[in-house]
Image (tube, one colour):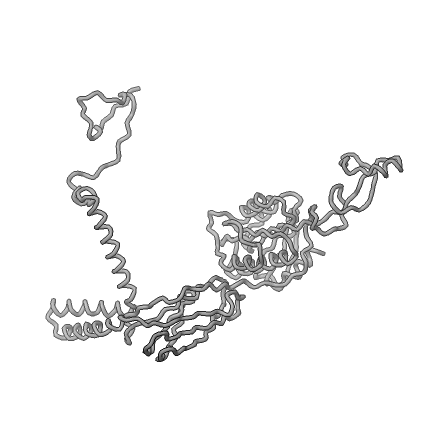
Length: 451
């Protein structure tokens, strides 16, 4: 079948034979800039050297405009807009009152600008007594300012940003070599990672139209850890390793020898005790006590749709932190995961640091079912898997998540539900499902599971 081409490729002479067969359709090339509009595109008529120069000048101008806009405060924008409006009204309509008002506002702006110039040379020291606190605790710190110059420094203001807020300290006049100290306390009502600093020396006019800061010290991260609760030993799970704890359940193959018994079909011949076999005449094999595995995996679902309110998510984080810390204190290998990947959990401090900055995941990253699948794939040899989620999770999704974990793994699912007054325990497939209303109910719920 022959395809007719209705268009002509630009730049090709139709009188010459085409190298493309007539029965092959040729895609139309990308639309070029029309010749009558090429003068609007600088790259079509400027040499490359001038293109680089114009680009550099544009970046410098844009940076200068950004720095100028950064020093104007909201009241300054109002004053500038008012001056423009008054000048326009004075010249457009001949209003003498507008002319006087425009002159007054312009003079005020002109007088305020010189306050921005100059530098205040302080040596600034920022010290936080603790860079890691628990929700509800106060972080106490100190700010030290020293006049290291040979002349006296006039009074000024120092700005200390803390997260999205900031604190302003009034510094008195300092003679040469004099030091001024300021103590401050940071309330921590919510979990998170707060950037304290950088400390800045503030320069501005008395009216507050303009403001300029000099950053003098790098920011310090303040980790606000979630609340945790002390738990008893988590004697869950089983596996064969030299560091495990023996239990009463007997196995055919392990490291803790228990007794001898008669051979049964399916026993490994490597465990035959030949001396006892020769003495009794029956084939005797060794029997072992099963030992517990020291590998824990904690999965915390961060999908916002599984939580009815933000406090449920905070409760779930506290539960995961409490279980993980107990596992680390018991010298267990801990793996912690969320939808976005693994959390650092080699030490308790790093584990809490990771939880402090944890946020909700995106809906496309999946819910508790996807989290359980990642746990089964990344930690197939775990002995205990703890899944923590919210009360809005679907029962079918929770059952599917528990079923995704490998066979033989002890599964514990914890649901954070603020409407519950007392912890409840139920079975979903082969998993124990605990529902909690507060963090204080966690030790009691764990004892129910272990009983």
